[in-house]
Amino acid sequence: MGAVAATLRLVGDAILFAGTNSDGRRPSHPFKSMLEGVRKVVNLDTVLDSPLPRSYTKFVGRWLLHLVETVRQVGAFALISLGVMVTRWNRAKTVIHPLIANQIAWSGIGQLPIVTFLACALGFAVIGQTVALLNRVGAQDLIGTVMVTVVVRELGPIITAGVVLLRVGTATVIELGTARASGEVEALEALGIDPVHYLVVPRMIGMATAVVCLSAYLIVGTLFSGYMFAFLQDVPLVPGEYFKQVVLALRWEDFVLLTLKGVMFGLIIATVTCFHGLARPIQLTEVSVVATRALLTSLILCVLVDAAFLLVYLLM
Amino acid sequence: MTATAARIELRGADIASAENLEKAVVVDVDWAVHIGEFWVISGSTWSGKSRLLETAAGLTPPLRGTHLLFGQPLAKVPADIAAALRRRVGLVFPDGGRLFPRLTVAQNIGLPICYHRECTLDDAAPRVEQLLAETGLAAYANWPPMGLNRSYRQRIALARALAMEPEVLLLDNPFSGLDVGHFAWWLEFLGALLSGHPLLGGTQVSVVVATDDVRPWRSAANRFATIKDSRWAVLDATSETGPTSNPRFS
Image 1 (cartoon, chains in turn red, blue):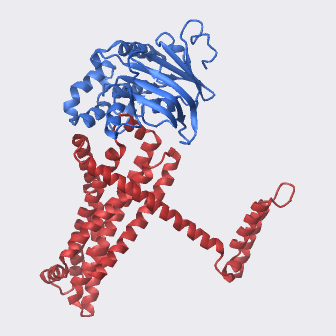
Image 2: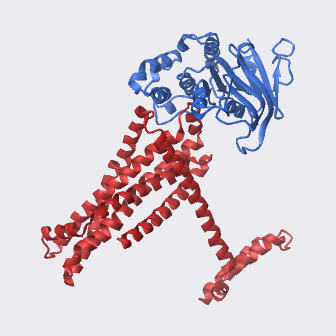
């Protein structure tokens, strides 16, 4: 520990040395104090011995305020987009409907191979092992409840949202960010085409539909593949008993909440990625930064919504 | 000519900067575009020509002053009427026209028709083919626009702007990056639009060109204006104060 601290202190001194002027004098006050701060942070002993520095709380506070502001802006963008979706529902059907179909094909059908792979992996990692373990401890009666709680309520929707976010959300924010940076949005406006109607609404409908459908597909696939892996481990559980337990553990609320969750996740991913891609003029060089920010915001919002649904499940 | 209502009119308008929407890039613009007029607006790079055209097209409101389209104040009419008025003004962007790279040439031109007239691309095909033929693009209908050079992309942008049969055509630096061989075609085509092209049912289109080089436009245009030091000035196109001798032309 002492060697590490000494090394870090050396790095701090090197940074301080780099901050001196050519004549060897120390830099002006703000820069000097910043470098002093760096040395204090770099010095591990100081960090370990001192109470939580005020700068940390300020950093966390600033980050939280920034998150709240982003959520507020995304919320406003979502309301505008939903307003456009409702008021222009029947407008320009010949243009918008094919865009929706394309979006569903890309976000949904296009992701079937990776979702199939994940269903197999999840079945092996979660169900195969859980079924084997529950059998070993003689708790076979809980298999259905565990499956529904883990796969149907939690892992199915959130993993599907993750797939759509990574594979479709990333591409969406890059595509829209590039379109914004190259002036395509202004070109749409000049042609009298509402950019929200043309670019955002099809993505919202497409991604919401895709997450719901892929969640169902992932869940069914996971339950089947999980039983296959359990079967390969010679677990004495007949298929009829396994699926009977799963069906008995399911309640009608599960279907409603699963659909709602999928819709929410899809809307969040579509809204956040479209917001970051379109909401403000950007340069081409900023597209990668905006994409990263969009992914992080989407992830945080999906987890927060998932936590809210957890409360609903607990109240059920 | 001035007895009829102006198609575009800006009165005491300050034009907002693209970088800072609260800052004026051109101040105190008094300008009216009438039928049969071919305006050339000159100015150096970053002088605010593009912002002036975007404001004139109704994409950005002026910071101050009044903006009328076809005699109606754009800020005071309901949104749907404002949108309908804006559709009567076509805007061609510079440097390749900001085309949609994922659509083909024909789809680029057909998009505004299909969107506003609620028809499929097949229904819009006759009109799209007519536009393609008149702009010399018939052979490239199914090409991606980025597969063509900038001179042809600019023509696609022109055809796309004409798809909605505008009564005013605003062109932002249309010769930027164009092969010299295309200049003559543009001048002839815009002249035909000004006098009533069959493509638009003989309607006389008012043309406004923003440019940093006024020389190619001297013989084609009949009205001139310039932006210098954020100031708007309409120039007389007589031989004495016209673009050849007027020092206010940059």
